[in-house]
Image (cartoon, rainbow, N blue to C red; front, top):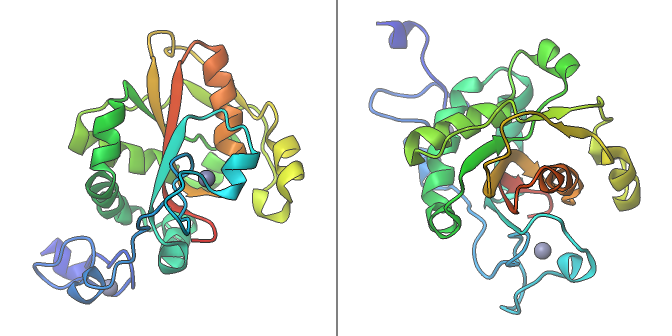
Length: 228
Ligand SMILES: [Zn+2]
Ligand SMILES: [Zn+2]
């Protein structure tokens, strides 16, 4: 009854879902574009040959160990925008299931002790009311049994959105943007979860803090990666 009055929406096209459709409509399910091999073994972006690393990762010393993204950017960008800014929190279940399905092998190889969502600054959290990365993390946790550690990382400054900056400015913008709270002591391998991977400066910056707190290896999974 409630479903008929307030139908759920397709996480891709946002049309109301029909009875029997879960997460996405049947039409969209057939046209999902995932990031496919060959990929950079460090950042997970597509590369042209199976050489192992993209040019970016050959020239950058990342603090994180490796990461993967699920969907092609052009395919999923609008959907992520609605998930992030337009209250479409209902997409989280679909995104979580797709992430675990597409990156199940990666997760099985790592065997992380915890899933850590990239935190929002308090101010942003109050304005938005939810952290899309945390919603995704909890859905992944439901399916994998890996616990979510939501309070162990905090944003110490309300950073300006990264998209305005070049690589060097991003690095400066993200410097000391995170602080590690309690609870990380016993963690050895963690997987950081976010919606979009851009240059990696956000993940590198928080990885640095996690490492200082004793975490050995930091991996990440994002829904997509810019430019894919
Ligand atoms: Zn659809
Ligand atoms: Zn790379």
